[in-house]
Image (cartoon, rainbow, N blue to C red; front, side):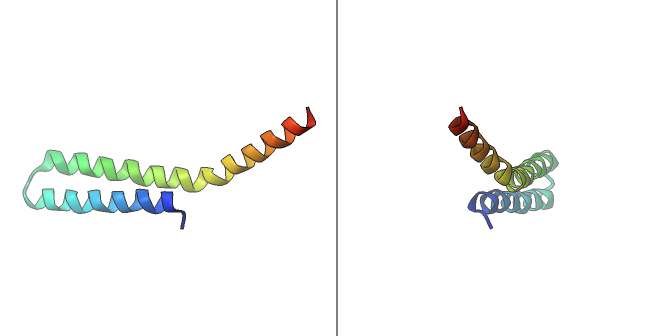
Length: 69
C-alpha cells in the first residue's frame, strides 16, 4: 500500500482510539471532535488512493502535449 495512504489510515485509527478513551471518560465534545478528525483522515486516504493514478496520467499528458507544441 502507498505510504501516504498508510499514513492517513494510521492517524485515523489513532484518532478513533483517542475517541474511545474520551467516551469512557464521558468527554463527549472531544469524542465528536476526534471522530470528525478520523473521518477527515480516512477521506484523505481515499482521495490519495483514487487520485494518484489520475495525477500521474495528467503529468504524462502534459508532457506529451508539451512535446507536440
